[in-house]
Length: 302
Image: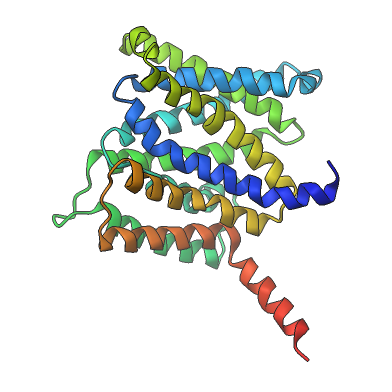
């Protein structure tokens, strides 16, 4: 396709990725009734590694042995993040899980500061204050305590942030798509091992279309297709707009959880979700899209 066509398709691709990931929260929660956490992740990451590995088969020419330890490191972070998030999902609502997971965007600049000595800016600090306020509204009850599911989801957000920082550390000069295949493969390996020691493989459940079809959706769409949409869309879109579109994942997560999973959303939750969303947009874009629009408006004035 021509560059012009790719630029036209970029934002719809990013929106599709956010939409697909937004649907995955309530589908994952429903699937957990029949498939244990580790086997669910094992199947999902195995399928993702195979599908993406086949799609990107030409990239295997650049493979060198050091890709293995790099894939193992970021695969370990991804496995821990997904595992803890999924255990949290089983203990809280899909909508709260969606927004609390998005907190990782706000954590990344501070984790980068700790690891790479790159100081967060005023937008990151403002985002952190907004985010803490939003999390308090979403998760704290009248006794100022937090339920296990919300706490696990916040811990998962920390590991997602760690995954982002780890990727930036180990992927320099490497083929990112090939690293993604390997991180899926190692995540699958870790999940299969944990599943073998903790659960019984749900062979009977996987023959039930009510389980197999949602699981196939998670494997093909939420793991492989959405990731491809994100990678291609971000290449052909400006980072600020792309980040805003991708942050809609949490909004879609709440919307679909309310429509299809029966989640109830109070005014307090909506206010908390709103603060977290603004915090994510602030941290990811620094509101550069507003500055850009203001600059364009000033140029068009007579």
